[in-house]
Length: 243
Length: 243
Image (cartoon, rainbow over all chains, first blue to last red; front, side, top):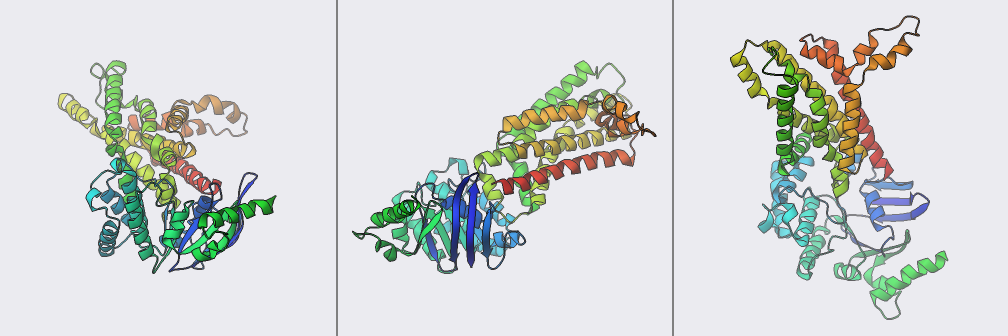
């Protein structure tokens, strides 16, 4: 279980996250929605231990990053925005490298390798260098590397950005399937993503978590029943309260 | 895990072909200086002195080209975010990157073996002294590699890392501590006269070329490398917390 209490992050004088309280557990597929600059990426980076918070508590399975960093990171799979990968490697080489970094036993690696390659339809590009891949394949290779060690908690920053509609459907199906037994947290500013995934939705605006519930609950904030109207009201309400 | 990182780093030099370029330039510069500045085929070279006497100056220009990308490129490409969220200790990261770069430096030095063999065919060589030369050059390369790794970690721009490493490397190789420390030392009640020579990089290196190697000379180089790696480790720690 991921537990976040009173999380605060500042960049200089700018407070990016303002006392965030949040919890998530296995079996949940969470879409973190928010306009650009809402603090989604910062929150994800803190959850995966890339940056420390300025205040507050982040606990993963009752462990914290200060004393049990590596134990936690073994349970997390994180892919940043823009999918930074080692471009000079082939997809297979990169997955093998990740498997070795996580010290995966050979049999588990082979099984997991086949699962992610099949699930994300990467078989045709396995021996292709990452630098020669299209954006869609590159993204899927990134997601495969994150899922390879079968983490309990998967954190993906805008995973479907740049994918064509068919690829988006395939990736969503894969993530939904994976979230049956694990937790998947994805960030996006696309409302269609939240709608399609139909899981839990958390809306972050100006560093404040202004909604946490399901898609239908979010619709209730809208006069016309659309998510875009609800999103506007939730994020606008946040701005109005601030003023 | 360490081995996977080491192989990735070492492979990276050959994937993008930078290693071949660096090895060629190194060989060209080494032979050029040995022949035209050291009069390799004119003076007595039973210990290959003409070849190894110029090595620190050549290495201080070549090694930063090996190390400049180690951390700076990761930062630039965003792969550092992936690397720092893997369950890897900072020491493992620092040592694997250093070892890969040092290995390439070692390979670079071994390119002169055909010259050593052909010299041994023509004249009566002092083989033990030649081994001592290689040890000295390898340890000197270790110091410059550790320096380059540290500087690369402090910079996001590989070109800047190269220039700073060359400058600092030149300081280490060419600095005459006698002139700097003498005014301080001679004011002391019991002046430690051995100190400037003991700390002088070039003096220590020359003791290898003279075939006069004592354990404290090894200790000097190993502790110098360890100190610079420790600085590199602190720079990685700072990178984590500065985010």
